[in-house]
Image (cartoon, rainbow over all chains, first blue to last red; front, side, top):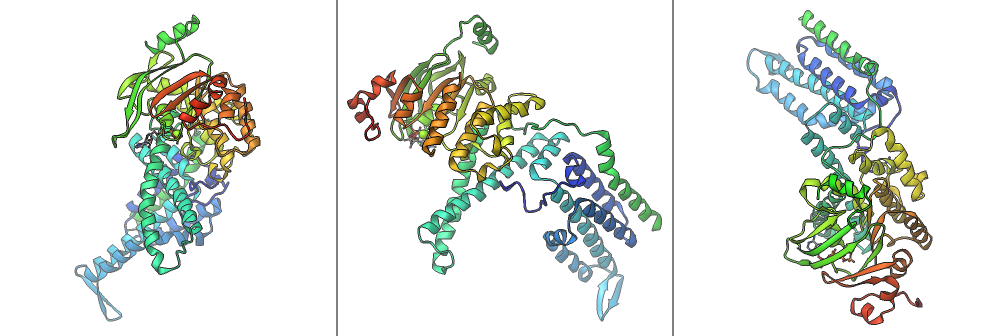
Length: 254
Length: 256
Ligand SMILES: Nc1ncnc2c1ncn2[C@@H]1O[C@H](COP(=O)(O)OP(=O)(O)OP(=O)(O)O)[C@@H](O)[C@H]1O
Ligand SMILES: [Mg+2]
């Protein structure tokens, strides 16, 4: 499926995880992150348990760990922040390889790193197994505020519109002899970006008018019949049960 | 009139005309006057072509028919209902607009979902959506493409899907903005067959005069924001002065 709805974080598939209703996955992901956050930072082995849990979900969903790892780099800014903490934190300090490091700073960095990483990995797992529009339907079924769902839907629409428009404009420029590799033609590209936003905006408006004409009221209608069964909730939330057990273990350990 | 009243009259067979436009005036926000007192009336089941040169105001008029644009002066009535805030949803259910550019119309990831979007908005239950989608796609002969992305279809195929997205809403008045542009000759003829089979009242904007003659017994000519001619298509097309004055031209070798 094209249309840009297959967003770059999505890995199409037909596994049981992919087929699970979006709202179940959203709730499971949020609860799992809550469990991770609630685990005391000193319970080091428990975080390994969370990673194993996610690993099990990846196996079930058929997601190669390398695929997830490559996308996890969006986390890098947090890593930079975390690395700074041990140098700027307060006493008591430890000396490691001749460098004085703040002990609370170290723990703080570890806390951010491990919980942030697990949070990112959980979100990536959700994104990998759920196409964007399913996420939106899931949010709507969970009674997320209409405004949030609408904004997310419109963003999705504009992304598509911009990508398509950019493609058309690039073809038109190249057809008129523009070679983006020449440095002196960078100006044309830059002006193109400006025009792109204007045109995308206008096209987005026209798309919106056409949607209004077909009765759009600001809420994505449900297109497929089907209710989420209790059994699906039970299966979908089973990783959360494991997550709760891990978090409790963490509290007992420390 | 209120929607309930209109429905009661419809049952008695005294339905008001499908479309009544009266003294419609409109200028775009940049001050450009696009419509300057347009008046027209389309009866139930009529097929009318709306002709006129580029920039005449045809698309602007179309956008008034379901309340996308609102008249500065004058009025538009659909089946007796004034086009305006209280019953816009009802108006949009009754008036189906197929836009000039299919890329403005299609936005869902698959053809089938795009076709289901309108009926779902208008309250067709989810378990009946599939049947609506199938019927609409069959009508435009696009059943085989239902799970493809509209972005990956050819121009003509997109146009047919755009028509299907509106047919699926089963509108009472079908408004088409240049339906035959970008179609190959066979697709153009096939679309004419599809349109010819429909019962809906039809208003078709077109630059394709033979197409207007083939599908619409009546034509209205719009130029510079006013109606300059209204009558049987054949008669209008036989008037070379009228055609010349309003930049209309029959294809080379075409005679009536
Ligand atoms: N968004 C807009 N802002 C300002 N002026 C506009 C806008 N859209 C259209 N116009 C102007 O309004 C006039 C009528 O435009 P309209 O699109 O209705 O013409 P049309 O009859 O559909 O022409 P065509 O056959 O080229 O589609 C034109 O002069 C046009 O320049
Ligand atoms: Mg137009």
